[in-house]
Image (tube, rainbow, N blue to C red):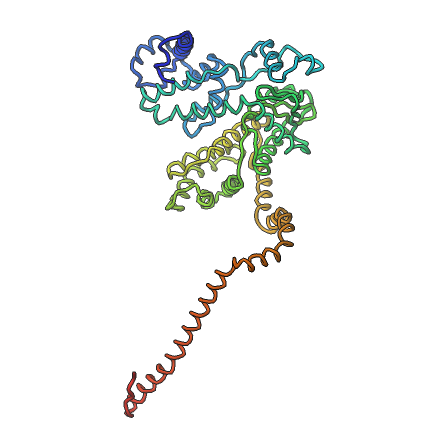
Length: 495
């Protein structure tokens, strides 16, 4: 949005009032410290007063004070650890959906508008008191776009952080989350993937009651996973619950290539029999076979301290630029990892290790794929949650057998058998057609060009053989002449 759009009209006054409110809250939390070169920063320091909390904490608290849209913005921003300092990314990752729900009357009106019937006809019963609230509400992205443009223009360091690109990415995430049919599809896919799982429960979607702005799914019951003491009182095996979380994550990543990418405690319940319940399917990650192979090779190579294999995995994935020296990249990875491996394995956070690898990769102009950044953020959530449940959780010991089994299925006879099984339907259809296809190709002279090329090659070989055969007697005669001359006999004229 351009500044010229603020010149007249009540809408401009509303936007100006909102901007002044944002400015006041930012001043109250001392956010001017994020832009030390900003003109007038001395005035901001005096106006805000002294605050002893870390900057990252004050940023999180300011976003929570600003309301739903800024909470969601902070959540999305926390996934861009390739752009943010670690302390800020860690603090923003604490943001959860702690916002008051909007009025029930507004919800009822939207349901009836979207589904075309009164709620009394759609549901046998309808509770007007909400059981939870999410951070999507009335959204005004223009303010964020304006603020991002100002940061880029007025702050040199701001250009490096690419705030307008971050806001654009946020807008894309927000658009996906506001389309509840997309979220319903995500939930349905995840439920199908774990239909027979004893570890994870996903609510069923009621498709006949879904629209772009309304999603109706099965009512789920459970204890929030953050209430560890309540879970213990219900008899839930907490260490087993922690291990199950790791197994669920690696199953989503390596078996399905489709994972829940917003696994903070506010989105997880636990049933009385110790199963996970997943909620909120607005942000999901997807991985290709190349991504999965890259991750599996890296995980196992890290575990075995095979840094050469880590470096080679980047090259094999095609993410390293041409001419990248594997030995130099291997040395850089070793310098990052060896100090970390000096600690016991159970004390190593693999999410942080993966982040350090990404940062090292950038020095070699290796572009880390966005889906892997999202996965790294999810892995941090899973590790943090697992160790809150069980401080003795050893992610390596829990994950390694699963990774080795997955790698074993990708190579060797198991992989060949799986490929044959997947291709068998296609071959079963194609093989009976081969004689007819070959006859058609011959009758239409589709193979004529190849046949003529083979004939020319045969003629060339025959001509070369004749020349060699003709030269051989002459060479023999020259050799005989040289021998006779050396023995004092008559010279032989060589033509």
